[in-house]
Amino acid sequence: MASLKEVKARIGSVNSTKKITGAMKMVSSAKLKKAQYAIESMSPYQDRLNTILNNFLETETDFQSTYADVRPLKKLAIVVFSSNSSLCGAFNSNVIKRLNEVIAEHKELGMENISVYPIGKKVADAVGKLPVKVEGSFHRLADKPNFNEMSEITNGIMEKFVAKEFDKVVIIYHHLKNTSVQKLMTEDFLPIAFDKKADKKTKTLSCDYIVEPSKAEVLQTLLPKALRTKLYACLLDSNASEHGARVVAMQTASDNADTLINELTILYNKTRQQAITSELLDIVGGQVALAK
View (spheres, rainbow, N blue to C red):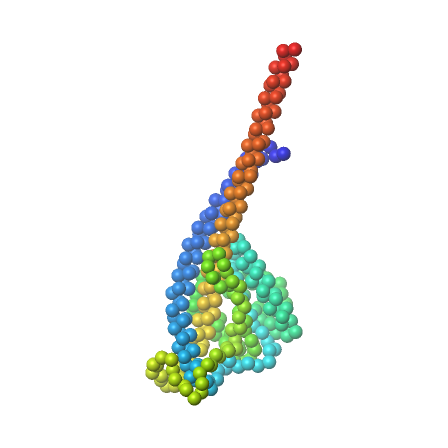
């Protein structure tokens, strides 16, 4: 059995760890609120943009776009979002596992034809060990989402898709459902799949728009905007999910620390009681020996 000194030292160590996890939880909670505010601020713009885009697409049934060009899959690009730091549960390991699954599903293309855009240090470290093409390093965006920087990356992806350097683009990221639940998403980014529901005989806009110079030209402008907004939304979602996962992980760690402290306290009290009992027995034994 451990000595009183050892048990007391373990209790002190666990208490120190609990203070650290508690502080990290508070920091992550504050960052989560900020990340959620960023999503809430952008959502109205994204929703309105998508509404306008869908309204036009429902009427322009003959509309064609280079971003919707479906062709035989020879070259694949994957945009994957992770965090820069750990201590957020299975957040990063799930992303890396899903990335490996997507790569395995397309291994017949050849690793030289699979490109990865790693947004976050953890996934960048994992991708560095794989025989795929890495399209750059984007660590900063994982901690500090920036629309302009993300737009530059999106523009580069769109240009390469139009130039047929990529035939398909897939995105992997976490969607924050609530603080306790982050859902891992895998979606096709390019080519775009248009959902044209309107009958060609009844081409009427859902809203009263005044369109200049034409609906087709407006759509050509709206589509890149929608794509840039989509990828930025994924970045914000991943960032918020990271903080949500860390809040849960630190709360779990704090709860486990409390449980361990209680167990160690009981052990300490039992060990102390045994030591006192042993000393009393020695004293009584000594007194009995003297009396004889």
